[in-house]
Image (tube, rainbow, N blue to C red; front, side):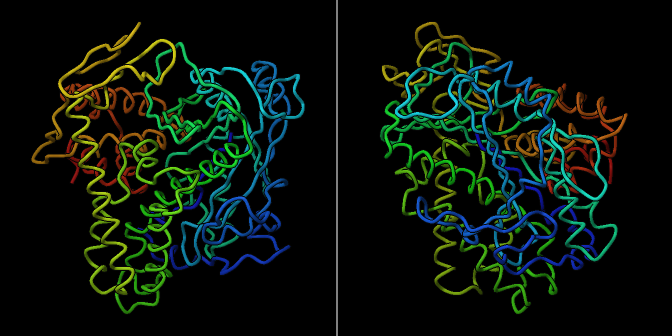
Length: 505
């Protein structure tokens, strides 16, 4: 299983141009060099998969990140079929001239305690519900981030904050900059299980995709001790070398998509609205060419015509990012300002990307409406998850299939907006941003944060169930610092909603 932590995000310091302009990023990674105190730069093994921009090398974090021995031994004892035999720690450069620069991959290679070496083809059945539990426990493992002032261990889920501060301390000319670089959005993890067959006997809300002999399941995974992450599980039943290669390609592609999603949020933030910025959406500025190159690389990766792992790009997005749109409101504003003055070839590709995303969003909303689905609706089926003998053609459904149950069901779909004061706020956009905000509030440090995180979690659940009055009452229990946090991390819809609830100007 490979965890990806997006650790630097320009939205965090967009409000302070002094900090933004103090950042000194490496223009390129030289073999053997250390990247701003992270680790030695090493060439990526050639072949295997098509490289993304600047993925030809990585910074080795073997000496930068270390796992605590006792908790790791306890994990291996508790999960005998998922014993961690090896850990890889790498930092990847995303795109040049961008403050959303580095992702960290922490790959934990697991196998049964008796199996010291992986053998293919493998055989057996595994539970997706169990994998969800194992992933949540792994994300809670204590780790240490090497620095000049070693601190107490942190959870893997929040390790990005310490890594970001360490990176910022080596890249900014300001002493105060490190506090403004913190972990970005939701962490993603991809679990590879070649040669195995997935099964479950517990309820699990997910999206699924079949790509030849390879299967993909995507779902949220709660983390032991609080927080959550996005989990993708890839498996096949043969364990053939061809399927293992396709699974590897899909794993890398899914992690890239999460990185691109975070990077596009950065590009749509006020951090790029500067004549002096390394990436700028102002025509004629020094960073205008950079934003064109950055957007082009992102769009081409999202709509990869090479079909990584043999999967159609749109089908992967529908499965892994069903409730997300890569082209949100803020990015649309950037495109409206810049697209007409961009190079013709890029303009055509961005226009096609925008149209494809709009069509995907419409199709998903229609599918939800026709099936009576919404964010609070779950179909739970005992046994095999594929359900090939059931077809849905319209109408509203409760429990469907053999031994099916419905949990927390809201039949008929929810109203698409919620009224807060004079505002009409899109429910889906608000729920997405509240999820990001909740993760940030939960990981915050301080004696007063626990009550706010619990209140925010409860209010968000009420909103998902359609209990708007209860949700608003819950939001009124929050401290002003939560609103300030929503503004700082770029969750503008959530910030506007909470300001309206708390009557803040």
